[in-house]
Image 1 (cartoon, helix red, strand yellow):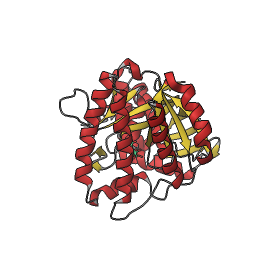
Image 2 (cartoon, rainbow, N blue to C red):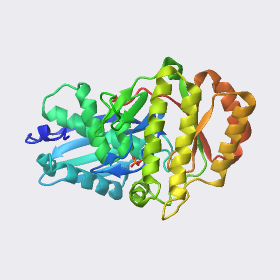
Image 3 (cartoon, helix red, strand yellow):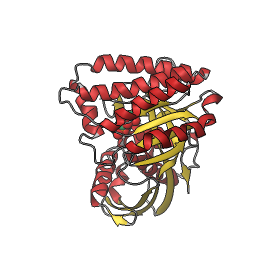
Image 4 (cartoon, protein in one colour):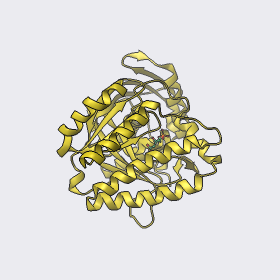
Length: 349
Ligand code: PMV
């Protein structure tokens, strides 16, 4: 499927646009690719509210494609180069992309380098702006298909970014007979009302650069002896998660959430080229969360992304108990704590 070809052959004009896109935390993890930037298994995430990227793009006709990018007003030639490469790839379908200049100003609302996935929010904010330009050149009003296009573009930039173009819960990847769930773009997922006030407190354990990037991690799954077993488990966990989210079964969703994080990190540990992204502090936090839940019966569960930081997921109704637990027991392991919650999705500024 290619949503881009219908945007070829347009006359380029000047245009300015600005979008805010949120980060997301995966409940069911995307880890391993097939074909052209397609996931080996379906994934599902929670869109955050406060952790987001704001990106303004100024497009102008030019002889050849060029990109300049400023993060917090500081020029970042390496980021600009990556976006240049991305647009160059897209120009195979949309040839006029070879004749524009982009000036990009971007800003994250969360501290840089904290391990909160800035690629998801960053690439989604960028691709919402690019999709907006496509629509502007075609004289189209922003409609439902606009977000599909933005998700399609975001997926090509960074898989998890495909899910950041919607609020609430979002799935990406083909799944049996579920309509709308496909590998090419993400779609919003309607969960039971008991999940509507979900909280995510992120315990930042280390803000150091990762030793192995997500890109390398996906590619290492190609040679991984347990890859097929992992993909089968991910499909099962996806089914359990969507069933639990529909029925309001916090326990089942929480158990799968933790299992997914542990499977993700188990893949890293058991990879032929073994590596470790969690830290001793991450394990201490996991142990304390388990103990707190066993002792109090509180519905608080952990997950980790591809990094050492631990996300605590819980209903808003127990926010004060969980915050007290975090303050008392987890602060010694934290560089920083960010309290976030379920978000509504991107906004055009
Ligand atoms: O979007 P990428 O290529 O950076 O991969 C992200 C993978 C995980 O964050 C570990 C899981 C996920 O589904 O978000």
